[in-house]
Image 1 (tube, rainbow, N blue to C red):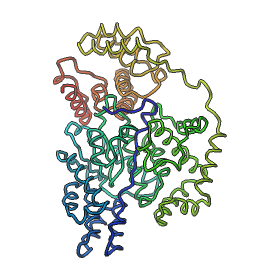
Image 2: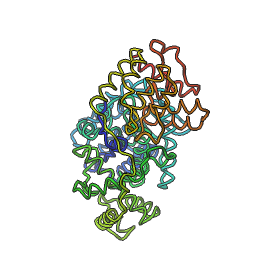
Image 3: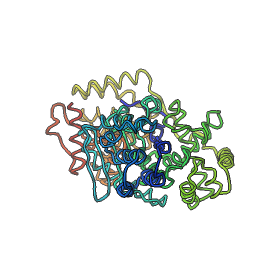
Image 4: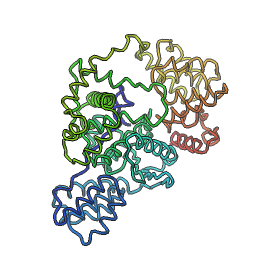
Length: 514
């Protein structure tokens, strides 16, 4: 089970763009050709890199290294391992590091299989067959997000877009090279590295996670890496990824456009600011989930200020200059485009942040936390419901539901118990409306969609189902549109009429069965 921090779980652990290994110290004879190949690979232009290698004429240690790196970008870790078996390559630090990554990646993906959406240019490797039913949804989100973000940034992304869907953080580490300890500390769920997105399946988390925005976040990293040839500083990479991760879709309930400014301002006020220039190699490697949350907020707020002040054309020019100048420091490009240094931009942003109007106190109703008795009743109700004793489950859990308790998971529990006990009107009353909850919970939205459809609001129902799938697609309640199979009747229970959702429902119920 993936541990993610309760606060900003939907935004904290989404991105960890890591810089690819440099080829500099293994470059020898024919350096200009090797550098050309290396640049093509870094820009995720696999076809161009293949053509350059085919036309290279001969072989060298440097070209062999790039051939292995290209194999990893294609997702062919076995071929990379074979190429890196040469002692001549392994005697270099870069060669040894790449060989270790290739071997761990090959072990983790040995039983994996690839599905492709060729018309839309998406390559998806699954580690487990249990995720097969999720593939159509991954294809759709990946294509829509890629197309929208490339339009925004004015940068194309060569096809196919490659995605690895892995089972847990150990596999994430094995395929990407991100240390397990770093992934666990910050609750990292996905990374953009080696020219592809590597993401943990939503199936790995009991309550799921916002996988659609996570995927879009990492796709943004790939696009920015291509646009700048991986010279974008971390504040630009993460700021753009956070800002654009939800830009490809329509607004959803509880999208909070002001969260970044609010968190960044609070961090400045209480002395917990991380600093946009103090992020280290990756936000995934910060020491605590709170630090990662603050860092994401600060870079997102900073990019928002930059765009308001300098404009989108300046952003596109900055991406181009970073690639053209090719310096590890962003200062030359930033000064070239805007005439100001990062320190000057940082000071102006902090001044603007401090002067911004404070949110009105009490704008949101207070959230009443779970008491020990509430938690005990919730667990007992779950156990009773699992045993088919719905009336008893409803009797146990219903007394804790008060108007001030706006937790959607508890409201769902009460509604589910009442519904299974045959009390439809009580179930709808207990579930409540959007104004009576404080956050997204997949099963709540699925049951809400079921009730809306029963009332004839088909469009509203579909929107609710989509929100549920966006966070927890392989929950039975979500995948089966609020319908839960009676105990012992999984094989004959009602299925959604849409073929893709029906397959998703079957997969979710098979997960319950096993």
